[in-house]
Image 1 (spheres, protein in one colour):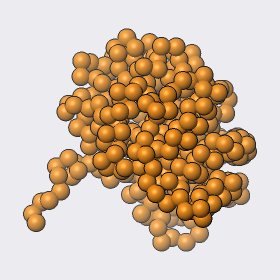
Image 2 (cartoon, helix red, strand yellow):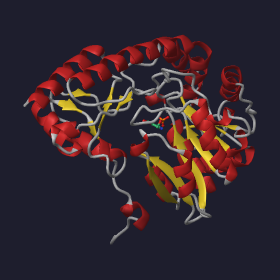
Image 3 (tube, rainbow, N blue to C red):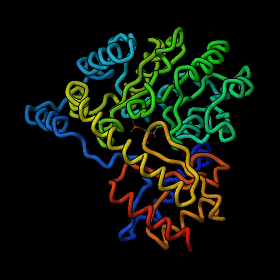
Image 4 (cartoon, rainbow, N blue to C red):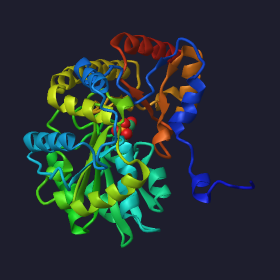
Length: 383
Ligand SMILES: Cc1ncc(COP(=O)(O)O)c(C=O)c1O
């Protein structure tokens, strides 16, 4: 067939996380603090709602936009929690996780050569999905500003081809988040240049030290925001694949157009389970959050004690310690740690070029596993 694969796809690099975890596969007794996935299983009443819907014979397609009942619940939830007003008919789309929402919005807004600003380090998919949509990712390194995007640096990166900024907070992989005052500064620049803020708030519920503020809830920001959220992280529902996108109706209509030809709709079982999550799952979210917070404090104090400098993450379930003292670069550090002590972490450079002095540690793992992994890391460092 010759060279059948498109140039665009050939040029995309495989995810650094995947490449590393191919090494983990097949190894025994490994403690993995690598994957970004809750160690909890979905709370029972949510699973039960899915099972019961199957027993009742709910096995059909739904409307392309998603079950009205779920869109209405999302609309009410956002109104009650954040005072945000989204019309369930025109301003909300149910997606296959935040992942699909991100892909849809980028494909909806990008003309070839348009630029999308991405603060680094970032979740692995932002750059490749931008490129697949025909856009040009413009990366901003935030390391020197304690991993926070500063408004002045953002402004300097904007030019006439800039179309949107992807803002994720709490951030995967650093756990950094932004308070309202910091968001206001970023908002001023976004509004001044009339850009779209694609706000990935999938970890919003897991904010520990202050109240999470959705970007769209800042005054006058809603029309310039495409808000992405989902059930994967806070409700421990990664495998159900349900997310939602909320935003201006013309953007949601464009996203729906792509979604209806490519996906049609999210699985009805998952949508029913997600409705139940909003209905009765909040208590479980708070319980899981308390446990993550307890682990966060233990992990960060232990990392600093054993000599891996680490700031306190404000949200999500990741720590991003500096491993410079080990004298190893992140990839070597992770490979040797895996080989010698059977602990899997993710090298910092999986989240952007130049983060060779950092590793990502997920504390979505049991307390016992965290303790044992830290013993092993300490032993490794002592050698
Ligand atoms: C920042 C961020 N956004 C999006 C996703 C994907 O989430 P979903 O399962 O909703 O597709 C992840 C998953 O790790 C993530 O870390």
